[in-house]
Image (cartoon, rainbow, N blue to C red; front, side, top):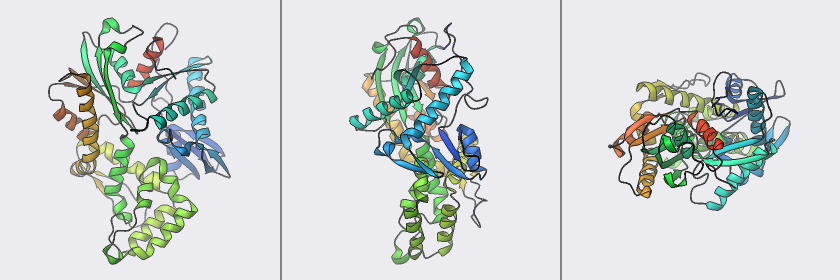
Length: 402
């Protein structure tokens, strides 16, 4: 928000406002790349280390652990600081001035059913922003920020359920919106309920990867004694922020020793090829691309695995996506219904969808069934929360303090 109160969207990632939380430590140039550039460098086969979805580590003991990056190691916390510093640098280049204040969006729950770890996650996020050079930190719940953005476009009082489906969490708020109150600092009386669950787009990717690609590597393969092959390696390979764990010396040794559990050795050979080539992020990126294509078109979308020898190309289908995501989507919808119930209302006027995964076809369909009286409105998938945070920052009382 500039000095005249005009919202400016910063093109953080080239010409795009949204920037994936990805860092690539390039071993060839000994540099660090960020966002889509990081993903492209990794997927093109450049030697190095990719880290993505670091927000999922907030509130965990892993933040203070070290991980190998090239010929040295870094704490995960310090890697988060690096990302913050790059965000700050790009924003300052756009603004032409030093930025000292940061309004940080946060999910309703970083960690489900654990207030201590949830508080630790917010504190860690704020500490990283301070170490990156900001001097004044405020927070706002992401679904409330999205609501403040949507309020700029309503022309009468509206009760909305804001559905913010991000990468790692799904967050909800029931809020009374009114353009006449949009500049008021204290909106607490209008916030009727908030809920959240630790399920988001990266979970959808994981579930689809496990149902489409991982069976080609041996997941759910019934081996000797008609027992399934141990599955920890497949879960690591399907979880964005855990993929690197599958490449450690201990994990590689464990995977090699699994050969005796396989009756189909071609599956084990393909698993080892994926591990030795460090193809985990690439496989998951292909699953994510197929998920998006299938969700947009409603048609089958191939998962390209041509980098693996003799690997049949699986497809993400509408029916397969419904089956793989059914339980996760049911939890998300249940959390949305709980939010409406907690507000004391029987129904809302509008269900406002925002967040990168909010357009997922089976999720939208499930919400329509669950909220038949409400009008579904699709907002800015990637920029709505950021815009709302800017509006919150312009109203001194529209924030959460430490």
